[in-house]
Length: 608
Image 1: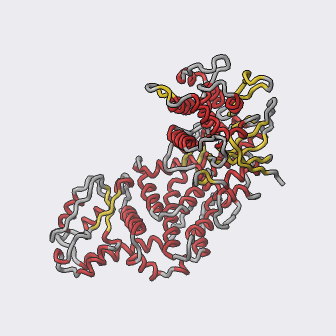
Image 2: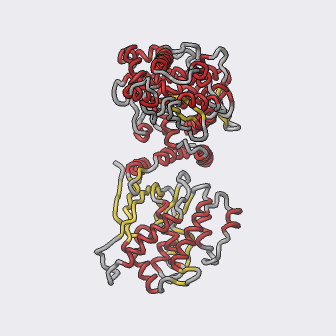
Image 3: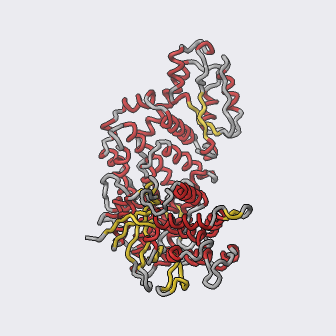
């Protein structure tokens, strides 16, 4: 059994005779002034609330956790531990203590806590007790040069000059050190504390501020602990765990630098898009791996999945995993470009993707990635991912069928998370790259039509949908109106789905007296139906027409729109009267339901 040691340790015992190395797979130093302000305020309050005797042990301050593991490195007269979690806290403490040390260079214990010293002489020091390998040791050199020069301990650091000479120079080190120094000695008002107060404060920090130090001799044990401990109530990032495991895999092949370069490129790509996250990329990767093994078991937690023997990150060559992650990122990026609809040919996919997103479910995205992954071309030189031209028309057909599959599953309401289970059943068929996807067979396995009869589906479309689902069906009807054209032209679709608004033909503000031919109850029911929504691309506010001539005013407004979709054109051509009767509305509603019903019932079985 792996040895795990957890103890409540003072800052003095945490640092003395130990060197902490931050492995290269860790994230760079990120703490900013806000976190430093919190740390300063907490420790200042703790210090000034002490009893007169600073050696009393009735009160201590708990600063958080650190997780460490034995290191292969050797240092004379010092143990060496790798930091798995807590590097931000340890680094900030070092900056804080150094700001105090500048005013107390004679404080022996403080010097021993900060520096690796010769056993026979504390005046001879040869390094900090924190060393970083992040960004090829550039983080370490930057921290080292920010704090001191061996020959000139208090030499002023030129940050701009330093950045030119040290790749990846991190300004947070210098900025946070200057923050702590200014708190002790204000540039305008001078020293804020007497030397005795500073000495007492150092003694309190070293002896009465504690960390929970969890140490193990096994890397896997440390990583397991890392993923189960919360930091200030927030779950630790699973991405950091995966990075560590992939790094260790690369280390076996002596390819650490190549891995760090690939990982940083992945993070840089993710950061370009606010809609994306590293965890989402790994979740898509999980579903792809499962689908390739025709594994249709329910979704599980990411960490648990990648720890399982069948899908462990350690079981694959790290480069293959990184290539897959980069391709997933490229696919997500390509989808975002499609959704923007900047090219006329993209308008179709933009609208179909918006219809799927309106389901407010994540599962359809898994299906889209699974379909695209084997059909996308990944140019590794340019790091661009794009859909092969021969698949573009098929992608439209695929999205149509996925809309059918998704909303049929939702309308069937077979149980909690039934859509996710249905999509997971579909994924192996999609990721295989087969030209003929067996939509009907899989829908049958999911018991879609058994759970939802034809009449039941019509009733749901007529009276049983609302909110985001109602809007999704309105967008679908807009798409079907475009397809109904003898020669469908993408310019008859919304040019920017981000500007889509939903106009009520019969406004909610309309009262029965404004239309004497429609009773109050009928009016309220009509206002809630799919036939009452029109998809409009409008940047400004949609005007409200509530007078008795509301319908003629509505027609004038629609006719004056700068961009009219096929649906609006067809609407204006069909309803030319000055008013809209109940009979006309019911016929329009019936046609709307019929179009959507016929679409949902019949999969397009063209070759994919």
